[in-house]
Image (cartoon, rainbow, N blue to C red; front, side, top):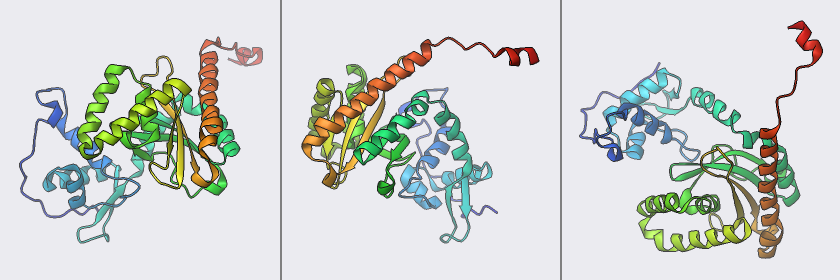
Length: 293
């Protein structure tokens, strides 16, 4: 049975939805429910109402009603013995909703084998990511067995302004779109902006010249990352491939002369494969099948 803390008096909150002030089509309650789901992460998989309130900025009474509703619908699962009032984890309904999205990313389906081959060849982890707000999210990862302890997996997120994948994504955007996102990144990390802006510009220049960019130990000193964007017709924003490899297995020269070019070749291979797939006419049905139907 779902158990919630006693109802609390509603606290003042911006009913207009912040950036959506005046937007009569914007469903505030739905947005708040999604904010509750976004509060969970691999680093914080179990949260109580108080913690969710702190992470989202939503009033505690609002969070209590939202978690009750989300639990009733299967999007959260309640752990009654966790903490004074119980805590929540994401429910399996979240996973069910993710599958149609992943299954319909054509690039993800086409790149599985080449990503595995590249991961085996370089001894690292090769991932495909997309943007979600100010984060990049992995939608597929291939890695060697011996690197299974690395934090590279579907759903893993990295800040757009603090990752090689994010830099590659920004480099592939039209200038106007890029400037708009850079403004948002600057607002989200003002103390780090000067150094971040310089690094993002260096990465943009690398992508323009080489087709990929390189970060040596940015997120963790022990891991180097190479990333290459790929833009497909009629697919909206770019996708990004990256390759993460231990620092001890990747010299500066190897990153630029071996792994980077291999990743750029993967991009070219995927563009050609998907273009050919789109150009192929539908195959005729076998005569035997046609006669039976």
